[in-house]
Structures are given as structure tokens and as C-alpha cells.
Image (tube, rainbow, N blue to C red; front, side, top):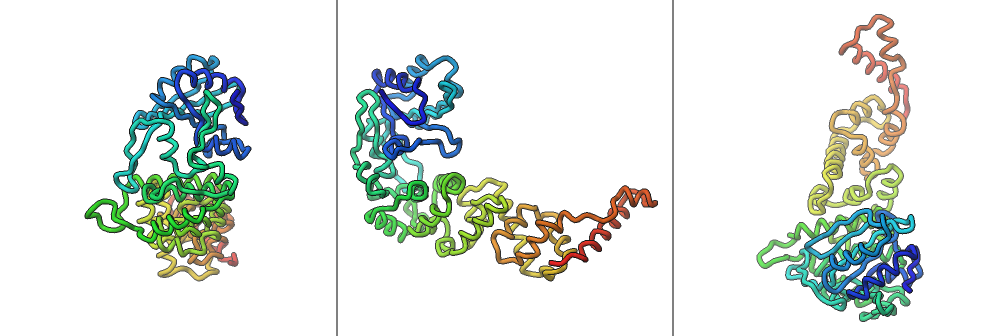
Length: 405
């Protein structure tokens, strides 16, 4: 009987019954973590996550499952026709879990960094397309046999990450960020041959992707995948160890040469966690051209605007910032239209600006009100209108003038 940590006992018999009619195997992180005596959870939702590969159509296997699952177990189903994958959200014995069922496939990369071309294949083809040997193992459901054609168990024992192919990094550079996630989560390190592949591949970066392309032009799909992998690393993994691994491997050059040489990112990201600034914009802030990098990574519009507002504020402070102790002038500047609270916080996080007055504004000055309220002024004879507003601002400015930085 299939025994998986964290999986309700009612599910394995259903999987085994379907696997007797159509070959299916548990693959990827669930097998790796099973051998490491860990529960494999989805990095975003924190619930058990199983990946199955079937020979033939994934939809056929799912139909068999649906007929055998306990009533009410299937909560949601999403099919991706392009890759023959069906995502299931299940609730079995009161426990939520995710189940991805994919058709075994083979992949080719006619253009480095682009999305691969996919065709149906056998289980062996599916394992051969994976990134690391430790993710290229499978547990055949019907026989219970562990399939390890690329010696992943040996790499697990040696606590090392080894690429499956000599062109793994060039085919898909986002595998470097994925490797950094595993390095951070598992405490593994790239083996010497994989380190050499990384060094040799990145030495030619940025390369032309197609004949005639100018250097540095990368497919949009690559930028999107890099952003998704970085978001997972920064939000769901020990980010300090993960980003350190990328820098140690020379891989931050994929984002920006200045970031690769940056030694201030640990402090910047620590401040970002403290002040609840999104970590990805805080990392991108160290690039030579943050907005260009944000565009390449296809950052969400809100994060792109945040970087633009922060850069505008930084330029303004560099040209003619108030004196450090002038609280009224700092409030007038930072509270002007176009300077969001989040942009001021990013300026504090990123540095290269007077940190102490920004911190004082964030923690105290912006919350300081006029000592006399609008209601009290009206009771004293003031009429509602622009003059009342101006008087409230004058009184607040007087109170701010008593503050010390």
C-alpha cells in the first residue's frame, strides 16, 4: 500500500486502482521529500501537494479518479490543454490537498530561454526533461518500485544539486533560481560539474537568442518565469540563503550586473521585511536601472509604480532635500502628491537618502495633527473653507517645528 506522509489514507487506494488501468507515477518534489522523510507541501498554500505523471492522456486518468473518489472530495478542477495537465483541489477525510496530473511528455528547446516545445512521451522521457537529478525520480504506483534513472538518491545522500543535462542552464536560466530555492530549503550545494556549467554559461551572458538579435535581448517568457521563481524564493523560502547562493554562483547577473556585485542587499531586504515592503522591488532597487529590470521581469503594475515613485523621490532629495531637523519641510515634501507612503518606505529601505528624518516622518511626524481641531476652530468663529484648512496646516506646522530629528 502506498504510504505518504501527510496524505489521508483514503486517497492511496483510489490512486492505485486508477494506476492499474493506466500507468502512473508519483514524481518530483513529493518523491524527493519522501526519501528525505519530509512532507511535501505546496509553497504558496502550505497544503500537501502531489504531482503525478501518466502515460497517455492525463484527462483519462482524472476521469477514473473522479469515479472512485469519496463523494464531495473534488473541490475544484482546472485543465491546461497546452501541457496536458489537470490541477485538482481535493478535500479527503477533511484534509485539503492538491493533486496535479500531467501527461508524460518530452521537451525540446529550439530557442534558449523560450518556452519549450512539448510532445507526448513515456515516463522515462518525462524524467529526462527535469532540472536536477534529485527531482528526476519517480515512484511507480502500480508496482511500488522507485525509478531512479539519473542517480538522484546518490545526490540526495551527498546533499548536492546536479543538473541533468550539459545545456540545462542555457535552455532555461530560471533553473538557477529554482536551484537557489532548493539550496536554501534543503541546505544543498551545486556539485563541481554543475558549478562549471553555470560559470561557462553565464560567462557568455547576455547572449543573442536568435540569429541577428542584439546582445541582451531575452524572450519575454524568460523574464516572466524569472519573476515567478524569484517571488517564490523571496516569499516562501529562507531568502537570505537563497539570494546568497545566487550571488555565490554568479547568477544575479541574469538580473543585473550591479546586483551581482551588490553587498548591501541583505540589509536592504532585512529593512524591507521590517517595514513590510515587498521584497522583490527592494531587491530590484539595487539594479543599475531598476525600471528597466522591472520591465524585463514583468513586475506587477503596482510594484512598477512603486519603483518609479521611489526613484522620483530619490532624485528630488538628491537635488534639494530639506535640512535634517526641519520637520515641517520634510512633511511638506513627503506628503506632496505623488509620494506614496510605500514609496517613502522604500526610500528608507533602499538607503542613499537621509534615513533619520524619513524614519521620524514614518513613525511620528506624519501622524502629528494640529493641536486645535477643525471643530474647535469653527466653534471659535472660523467658517469652513480654504482658510480653515490653511489655519489647520499652519498650526500643525508650528507643532512640527517643535519636533527634533
